Length: 335
Figure (cartoon, rainbow, N blue to C red):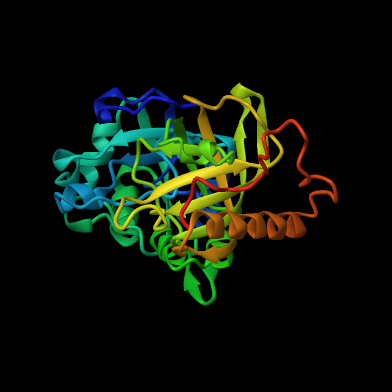
């Protein structure tokens, strides 16, 4: 598993002859997965290692200083997914120097760690200075240098190519079904559980508040079915939860967007844990309530609806006499 970000092409791990694909690979969606399959196949034909060069930060953030690109997943998660697909994930620090390299300079800079036996590209792939590294130019260069160009078609969904930016737009619109279809799995967030203002615990409905070390691509504000996991804290993957993405308008006129999760029928200490949250169906939009009582009543309805959809068990939502009246519901959340 690759866990550390390389600081430049001069520090790449040595893999020798390689079939190379390159890009940001944010979210490792179905289009990326097709490219990874093609890379493995090209590696087999060329007796080479399958390699994905993963650029970070996002090139748009270098080309347009001040721009921040939201991510479908943090870099370590993307690297892990690529490795799980059977391809070596090699992070490459993208900076102004790299942006201004001609394609042949970039390939030279990879040596001796990586020697291209094949470049695996899609018809719209272009890299290097002025995006001059097109498939056509690379075929010409490969004829001189002894590498092939393996072209794989873009994966379409709804008649248009799957892309990370397209998935982000569907998330922002609250269209989880389309985002999920293009990812090939549920959208997810990976954050660290931090202390909130304690309001949920005061109401006997504690939630896990998430902080992120990346800019996450968030779904539209609202309440969602979710699936959480923190194996290091005894919380198995894909444990059903209710997830809030919002500003808690019942308690605040203005505020930053927060992500909170209440894990159904589980009680434990998650502070400081890395929590992976998969986002499922949207239950409702974010609303402001006139009173805390009205908010709590709505959240009880949210819980009942979640359990109905999850078929979680007829007795799972009943209160216990010694639980202080707490129910498995999301309450330290937007109303």
